[in-house]
Structure formats: structure tokens, C-alpha cells
Length: 278
Image 1 (cartoon, rainbow, N blue to C red):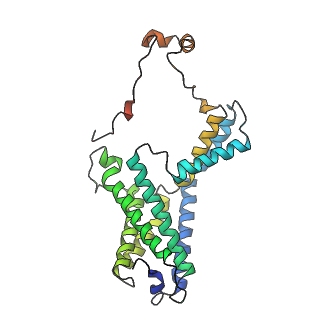
Image 2 (spheres, rainbow, N blue to C red):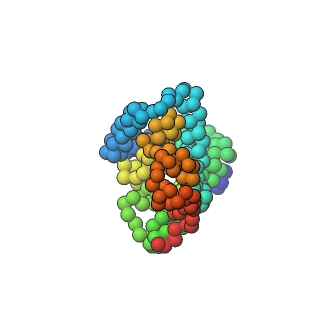
Image 3 (cartoon, rainbow, N blue to C red):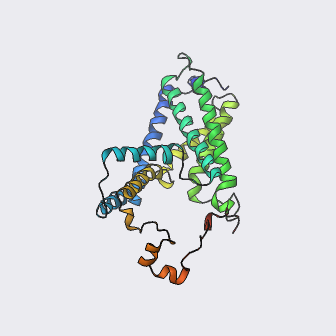
């Protein structure tokens, strides 16, 4: 089961061309939904307009080597390791879901296009990775849905309260769940296979109404923000001051007037404790 390609056995019932055609259609739906979403929200337009505006307040020019270093930092932290999440539980859940989804989808495409029939034996590693990816996705996704998402963990709302924004995560969970159930029950044309196809169609066809497009915009925005901080523009925000510095207090006399010459450390504030049913 863990070492067999379920799609190769399925080729006896469904022509390989149909399976490969389905993958192509789902890819086109994802691309089309992402482009339409970016056009509707004007995220790309905002990104380029903001970058042009930020150049006017730049204090120095950022060289090519520095930009490469910034891009590498964004790739490693924001993309590959989800370092923008301060909450370790949320970060681990996101990593499991993200990498599980990538492994699951990539191995699905490889097995269907490269090893579609029993006549072309599938390397044992591929179906193993396919099952591992689906399990990672399920663990990370269900962990997020039942215990981490803010309206359940912080606001105390019921976990089965649904909104249209939940379509993406629910269809993603359904896809991995029914894929595993289909494989564990022997594959073939079964109810689990039909549910697997239905949920994956909803997943990829519903990209327009999901947060999928932000996966492309978010790294670009993080890169642009780091460039702005590196060139001294700081998005027109004031620099970080040490409020106990006499020079800073002379520049801003309101600080010693209202906070004293040795302003207290305000502490972690909102990060002091995890929000819980407020």
C-alpha cells in the first residue's frame, strides 16, 4: 500500500490521457484563479506603486549583491521555513501543511505523468513520499483547524462554524483525507476516489475565493519591505529610538515631560501571553 502507485492500478479503469488531462486542467484553474484574484484585489498594482513611492524616500542605493542577500533571506525565512510566525505551534502547523501539500501534489503529478501504468514500474520512494505528504498535510491542517485558528483558539467560537473563507483549508483537508482513505482501501474506482476527485476539484477550482494568491504576493512584499529598510526609506516611519538617550529627549522634550528621564520598559505588551477566549 505505502509502496505502490495507486494511479498506475487505476489506469486499467481510466485512460491515462484522462488522468493527465485532469492534472493540466487543475493547473490552469490554479493559474487562472490566481491571476483573476490578483487583478480583482489589485495586489500587483499596489505592490509596484508602493515600490515606486518608496524609492522617493530612499537614503541610499541598495546594490545588486545586497539585493541578492535580501532575496536569499526572504527565501529561507519567509518561504522555506515560515519564519514570520512567532508562535511556534502555528509555525509548525503551517510547515507541515505547506510542505505536505507540496510533496503530495508534486508526487501525484510525477506518478501520473512519468509512471502512469504498471508497465512502467514506479520507484518505491514516490508512493512513500505521496503518503507521507498527505499525512503531513492532514496532521498540520487538522491541528490548525481544531486548535490553532484564531476564532477557535482565541475567540472561543465553535470549530464547526464555517465561512466562505474556510473553503480552501476544508477542501485541502478533504483532498488529503479521501486520498489516504482511497489508498488504504485498495484504490480503484470507489466512493473514496470519487470524493477525492470532488474535493480536489473544489480545491483547485476555488482558488479565486481563497488566500492562495497571497503565497505569491507575500514573499514579494517581504522582499520589498526589507529593501526599503536597507535603503533607509523605512516606509516614512521614524527610526527606533532609545527613549533614555539624552539626545533623543532633547529632540523630543515630550518624553521626559510625560514619561520621566528614565521611561519604563513597556514589556511585551500584546506578546506577554497568548490570547485565550477574550
